[in-house]
Image (tube, rainbow, N blue to C red):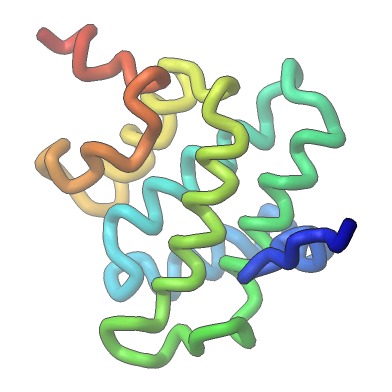
Length: 142
């Protein structure tokens, strides 16, 4: 049986992930990439710091974050309007694959960092990004 080929094989990018490179990339592109891309990146970053997630599972996270960091990817980041589409796809794939590990604490850390960088934002801007079964912040704030 032939193995299905992924559109973006994030596994090959995990070696490009380091904390300093991630923060540098976000610093450079946060406004251009947009709040959803940055939020997805932050959720994955904080998940990568969770000691309850196995090293094998973290490789998915590192692959997606490595893909985000690398400037030479499927769709060049410099392309206005489309440049971060592939990055977002890789990040969304990792969030979906790791959704059972997203905790309210991880969501809160990511949102706090967003507020640091973007100021107050409307939660509607990031609504629907995380699988509904994981997002408890809305329920807590009501």
